Amino acid sequence: MRLPLIAAAALLCALPTMTSAHHGWSSYDASKTLTITAPITEIRWANPHGAAAVQYQGKRWEVVLAPILRMEQRGLNADMLKKAKTVTLIGQPRIDGTPEMKIQRILVEGKAYDLLA
Image 1 (cartoon, rainbow, N blue to C red):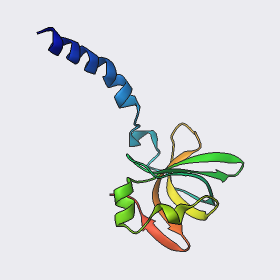
Image 2 (image 1 turned 180 degrees about the vertical axis):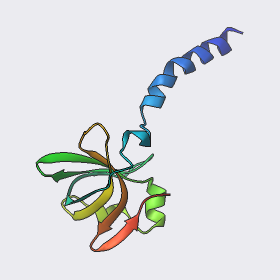
Image 3 (image 1 turned 120 degrees about the vertical axis):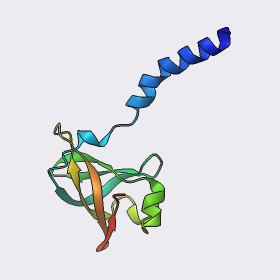
Image 4 (image 1 turned 45 degrees about the vertical axis):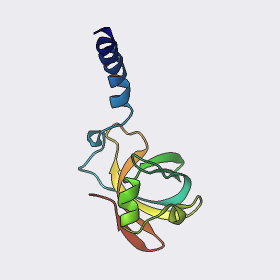
């Protein structure tokens, strides 16, 4: 009887950590669309979604991509987003002004890849 109670308590303690580990889309301004053309300085090809960084107008911008499976199904793969490759990113900036954006579309070598569901 004590073991289920301990397990439930442990789960409840971990819940705030798990929910804060991933942000929601409400932190991005859906009323604004930003277009950035810049070289990739960092790429992270991992779930729950890919991410990258670019240097733009003197700031490091964090770039939130789509889930890996979705990008690959649409023809975009990690080899296409190598460091120093210049890409065009179209998406929504964060509401709080942090240099970060959620990507809707990415252009690589002139070809557009839509990342929305």
